[in-house]
Every structure is written in structure tokens, then in C-alpha cells.
Image 1 (cartoon, rainbow, N blue to C red):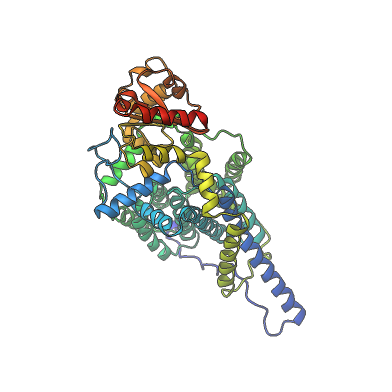
Image 2: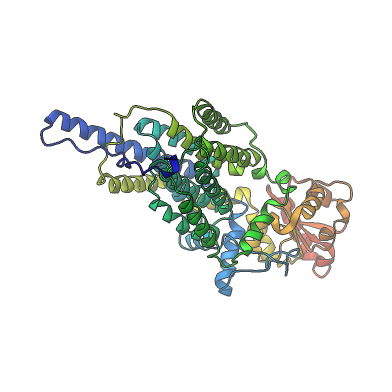
Length: 525
């Protein structure tokens, strides 16, 4: 009987040891209780650590979260999702989809209720959820409690740079849950857990576009199940018909979104702009300048090493690791793929001490959840993560005061702005942007043109968007800022340590005294 046709093996019970029997000595009972309390405290620390890393970062100056919130506000005002771009001069009337609309509504509601602290609460809560999902994945594959905790901790640290208020946190969480379900089904032959996958894929496309990565992963066990019927070197306990049926159901589930099949066109558009990879830091390859960079490499090499030593061909794990390495080493934003995959392979292949099992009872789960929540709340207080501090942090990275002055003076557009500030200006100025963080809206050609103008390359002064601008807001140290100081078409109207605001002289002709007064105040500052 081929491996794929073999009867399902008895699924091992959850790695939770039973309490000592009635006949056990009091000393053994007390020792077991101490072990359980120690393990519970270790898990609280394990789940709290990513939250602390997120709180220390407390990143509210993210360039994208602001246009996401502006999109949510537009959707609530119009009671619809956008199909054309309502926010930029370039994209006006052109097709555009808010593919992360559900995330956008969530982050906007958190901001409405908690202010800037709501943005941090999102990042912190998702970091805790990801840590829990990673540990669940590891303990299902590794009986040794210590090994499972260490692998979870290393994986969490390796992706700590990603604990920012972005929708990709949902992709990280869902990917870990998906991989957990697939690996358990392959290990035990019990496929009922896979019925959760269509539910997962009904949510995923409404939160983040990288549900595509999840679909790619589904294709691997489907191919493995088919090959296992014809090739003895491939082993799996999943029946091919069941796996292919689940995969088809997941594809259909992805259509439960406002854009239907169009979500795949959007996904293709995301990866069909190769030039964008060179312009955006988050899309560049891993630079290997930080310790967590090297942790990613170490995990990948260790996973490849244990697979190379295996006596049988590990089809699923091998193909999965190759895919993960390709995705993650191409773009550091996606390093979480190889981190999760490599950690799972190590958890499954390394032999630990099975006597050192997780000994908690089910009653410990509420205690761990409550203790983790209290520890996170304490972290907010101890690290002084409140709206007052966050507003000060925001003002150090975003042109807060420049926007206030522009609104007070009534300076109008068309606006020419910095790429990284586009989302924030979209949220605060409520004017059409010249460019913002939605790179796929603008395309390679326009981003190249903006970069050349911003850096003052030859021909910068012939940029048509700059020529027709009525208001320009740029970082004070930008090369273009220095050139505009000498450009007769513009007058410096405001400047501080962070931002410079220029107004077209044709716009100032009706109120020269006011403009010169503003410039004088700026110079005095």
C-alpha cells in the first residue's frame, strides 16, 4: 500500500502532559506543579517579548498607514470601496482598488477610538498573535518544550522589524496558521483541520494581497499527494482528491471580496513593476547589516542542512524552502516567509527530549492570555507609549508643523510632495497628491521621473508636475529643496528643522505681504 493510501496514523494527543495520578507522591505532585508554573511564565514572556519590541518601536510615522486610514475614511463617507483613485492628480479617474479594505477599516476605527495609541495597539496585538501562532506551529512539530520555545523566540526576533502598522502582519499570521494545518494533516492523515483553510482564504484577500503566497503553498501538498501515488520516494498521508478539493475551495473562497476575480489582476500588478524593487527600501534584498538579518540566513541554512541529511526525499519541505528562499531573499519585506518555513522544518526534524514536554493543562490557557494582556498594558505604561509622546514622535518624522502652517495660510495646490510624506499629506491636507506610497498606482516611469527630479538630476526643472505646482512640501535637506531656493518660480514660505514649504510666486502675487511675512517668520525660526 502506497504511503498516500495508508490508514491514518493515530494522532498524538496535544503535547500537554496529564497531572500526576492519585497514587503519585506529594513531592512528585508539587514538582509537577512547579514545572507547570515555570512553563506558563515562560510562555507569558515568550508572547510578551514581541509586544515589547513593537512598543519600543512605537512606529506611528509609517508612510503608508496614513493613506490606508484616508482610504477607510473615504469608504465610510461613500459607503463603497473605491474602483478609481480619488487621492492623486496622476491617478485621478484611473483604476485603483483598496485591496486591504478590511484592514483599513480596522486601523481607522482604532485610531478614532484611541488616537495614535490605537495604531501602536494594532502592531502590538498582531505581534502577540503572531507569536502565539508560531509557538502553536512549533509545539505541534517539536515535543521538546525548550526547543519549541527557542525556535519561536528566534523566529519572532528575526521578523521583529516588521512589527509596524501594516496589513502584512495579517499575512504573517495567516501563513503560520495555514502551514500549521497543512503540516498536521500531512503528519497524521486527518484532513478535517484543512476545512479551516477556505475560511482563512475568505478573509485573507480582504486584508492583504499576499494571500497569493498562501495559494502557492497549497499547490505543493496537492502536487505531493498526486506524486505519492506514482512514486514511492514521496510520502504524505493526505489523499490527493481531498487536497485538490480543498485547494479549489480556497481559490473560490478568495473571490469573497469586493473586486471578485479582479483581485488577481491587482496581485499581478503588484509584482509586474520590477523597477519599484530598486526604489523602495522595504522591497530591496536583505542588506545583512543587522543581527536579525543574520538570524534569517542562519535559519535558512540550518533548515537546508537538516533536509540534506534526510535519507528520503523531502518533497514538500524541499520545494517549500526553495520557494521561501526565493521570495524572502528577493525582498526583505517578505523575509517572514523563509523564517516561518525554516523554523517549521527545524522543529519537525530536530530531535529533542520528549520527556521535556509541555505539561500545562487546558485551564492554564486563560491564565496565560490574561497575564500576557496585563504585561502588554504594563508595557504601554512603563514605556510611556501614550498619545502625547506619540504626537511628539510623529512631529520628528512627518511635516506636522508645515501642514499646520499651510492650512492656516490657505496655500493651495496643485501639490508637489515628497514620496514618503505623500500618505501623511493625503490624510492631513486633503489635497490631491503628486505621489504617495501606492507605488503600483504610479508605475516605474513616474517613480523614476520623481526620483530624478527629487535628486536634482539634469532636466529636473522641466518636470511638468513641478512646473504646475502651486505648493511644494519637501524635506529641508532634500537636493530639490536646495535647488528650489534659487528657482525664481517659487518662494520659500516656511521652513523648520524638518520641512520646507515653497509656494509658487504666481500664487503669491495677490498677497505678497502675507507671503513675505511668513518667510520672514520662518527665517527667524
